[in-house]
Length: 442
Image 1 (cartoon, rainbow, N blue to C red):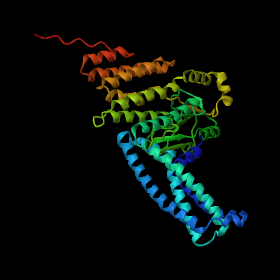
Image 2 (cartoon, rainbow, N blue to C red):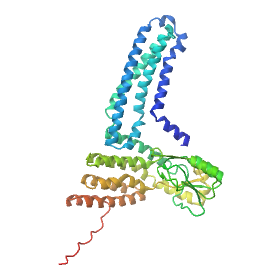
Image 3 (cartoon, one colour):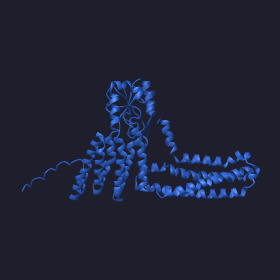
């Protein structure tokens, strides 16, 4: 996805844009009678009087204004509930939820349609044929509004609940992981072993914040102009401090080309889900932490999140063979010669996603805060056992490391020996032998 495509996708998720489109459709529908009225037979138009259309439009105008106000108040309450019971990071998904946006936009657009229709009727611009067309369009609008209201009432029963929020975050994380699995290196050349040397020149970005999007096509064009490959230092989701380079090159980079390279990065104060698979996993872990807090004390939600994390990580385990083959081809001389045909952007070297960071974001905080709950610690060890069984050496190694980390936390936090033995029985990492107690000086 290019930078402009990413910007457009961000704009289309805004409520104001969708509402504006629906308002434009409403105004166009209200004015449709002015365009179509020459084609309506007069005897058909005389069957509908202006009073009938005017009364219906007034009902729509008054009711849609009240429904819109009520819906907005419910949405604000739902967002506040999601932020307090789940995590504030999930409210961005609620704001971008297409169902809520479509319903509110329908109500606002219907209100504007009725207002424009009433004004046009009062000043007499329709005529009998135009009133007939307006009546037909009004009936269609009523049907559409009724169907939207029925769907909206059913949707409001779930909006803001923890389970619904978890499902929304899982869907966003699954989309990001699916895109990552389809193209782990963003179309560039796999490069897991790059280390900058003294002969490399780096390009920094002055804005401090999180990298939201990387336009690899722009970087590839800059590398072609430079005549040397570019090495991406950090992917989307990493924090840019304005000091460390985001891109390295084998040759000095002039100012105009450096500005083009900087333009390929979108940096802002918060992370986004689209190009950052780790962010969705981190938000799910935050929901589990809120559920494990003493104020909430809901280990069931934490257990549900652990299962969700395993479900999301499973597709990434199947990438083992694909990543190994891609890296081997990039390192092989014949593979380098064929890179122009194999990779979409052969002049940009992209590092893989660090599975250690993925597991840290997903499980470390849950292992720490859930160590004192035997059911959570037990479910966590079973999750690591499932991940270790997947045919991926990196997954197996990370699962064993995090199993040991969670086990040490659980053994230190659980007071009962029965609970500790139960967790040790399912752990895939055996704890180190405890040191013998000190001898009694007496």
